[in-house]
Image 1 (spheres, helix red, strand yellow):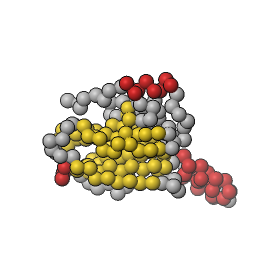
Image 2: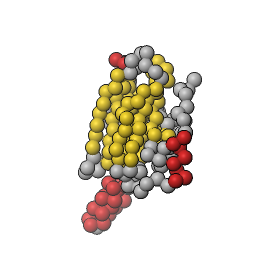
Image 3: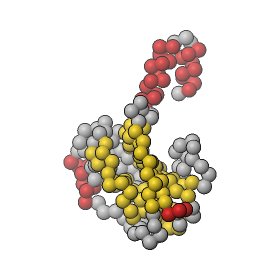
Image 4: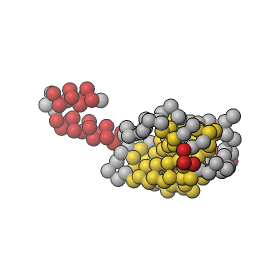
Length: 178
């Protein structure tokens, strides 16, 4: 993309270059991004229930509603990530309107200060970006799964989820990995 921009600018076609840049910027906008990060000798999984009822997690990393969970190895979601910080990220480029329920599950180990950080972005990388950060206490004796935020209201690009996508409502969350 950068080479194409430079080529258009070198050819003196500034109008086409600006249009291409606007199109690129628009293509990078995401309706919903959730990032859970933590420090310590531990593993935490992110689970998102989408408005259609589908569950997006490491066990089901791609949902029928378009969400994707990027696992532990994708810890560099933002350039300001610090060494020793681990994260999991959920991205939904064009979500459905409704409620997104976020859960975290401690798989093993101890999280530093018994806290995880949850960053929620709506309209990520747009002029109307909204960011909410929450530091959630994760006590050592907590159940393996904790609701972090009851819901995120999202307007979304897509219309209401088709009926065949609503089957996920009956889907149960799987127990923690062994």
